[in-house]
Length: 474
Ligand SMILES: *Cc1c(COP(=O)(O)O)cnc(C)c1O
Image (cartoon, rainbow, N blue to C red; front, side):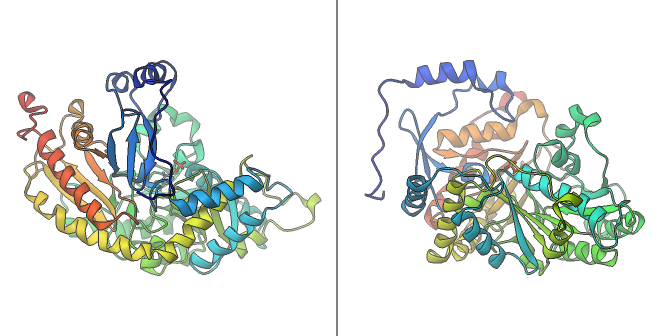
C-alpha cells in the first residue's frame, strides 16, 4: 500500500445495515433487475486501493472488471489523485461553450498525437453514449454542408449485436434485442450487417464459410446502400457488450476498404477497446486503419471521472465552418463538456501510460490470462473462451457440442459472479458470459490470482460443480 494514501477508515455513523436499507429504498441501479438486487446484499464499496475495492465491512476484492471496463492504473493512484487535487485547487469546472481551459487544450493536443493519423479535431463530452451521439449527429450534418452536399446520406450502417450506449441515437445504431425491444418506435432505422463471429453459425455453414459470408455480406450491403449511407459504425476488433465477441483478423480493414470505395465515413467506437485494452493503445492500430471519426470514453480518464471525446478529420470539421449567420455551426454540447477535473485526470493517466510501460504490462497480462485459462477449455460447460488483449469472455453453455445455452432463469453467469465474490473477486457477467477485464496496469501476479479464483468460481457455480449451485435443478 502506498504510504502517501490515508488508511482505510469507516465512518462509525453509518453502518452497513443503514446504508443497505437506504440503498434498497432509494437507489435505482442501472441494468439491474431491482427485485433480485435487493435480495442480494451487494457489497457497498467505500474505498479503492490499487487494484482492490474495499467494502463497508472491510472486505477486500480484486477489481476484475476495471470498475466496468474503465479503470487503467488502479484506484487512488497518487499521481492521478495529485493531478485532480491540483486542478481542484485551481478550478473544478468551467465551460467550453465560448471559453477554453488549459487542460482541455493540452489533452486535445495529446489525443490527436496518439490516435491514428488524420484525426485532428476533438469534441468533448461526458460518456461513451454521448461520444457516439456526437459522432452520428456530426457526420449526418456533414453530408448536408460539405462542398458537394449529399443530403440523401441519412442512413447508418452498423454491425449485428453492436452496443454503442444507451441514449436513443446510440441505441439505434446498436442492435442488441433486449435493449431495443421497449423503445422500437423511438429509434431510427439502420442497415445492419451480420456480426463476423462464428461462435454459432446459420444452418448450412461451417465456421469458415460463415465468416466468408460475413465478409461478402458487408461488402454487398455497403454497395447496395452506398447512396444513402451516412456512415458505418463499428466497435473495432471486439464487440464488448455483446459478450466479448472477437472479430477475425482483416475484418476492420475490409470494412474500411469497402467504405472507401463509396466515401462512407467510418466511425470507430473505441469506447471499450481504447486505452490499451486490446494490447495497443487503440484497436484500429492493429489493422492500420484510419477511421474518419473515433469515439473514446471509458479509459480516457484512467477510469476516474466521466469524460469522453469524439475525434474527427479536418474534412468533417471544415464543413461546419462559415459565417455564424450561415447556421453551419454544430449545435450540440453538454454542460460538463471537457470538464477540467476529467481532463487533468486524463493527462495524468497518459503520463502514467508512458512512465509505467502500461501497454507492455497489459501484453504480459494477456499472455498470463491465456495460459491460466487454457485448462478451462476442457470444462464440460465452457463453450468458448474469447480473448483479445486483456478483454476476456468465458461463455458457459449447457451443451458444448451444440452450444445450447442454459435456461436464462438459472442466471448462471450471475451465480458465478456471486461465487467469485465469496472468493474476493468482483466480476460482472454478460448473460452467461463470464467477463474478465483486469486493468492494463494490474500486476501480473494479481491477474494470475484473478484467473485462479474465477476458475474456482466457475467450477463451484456451474451444474455438477463443487459448489452445487443449480446442481439439483439439472
Ligand atoms: C460502454 C460502451 C459505450 C457507452 O459508454 P457509456 O459511458 O456507458 O455511455 C459505448 N460504446 C461501447 C463500445 C461501449 O462499450
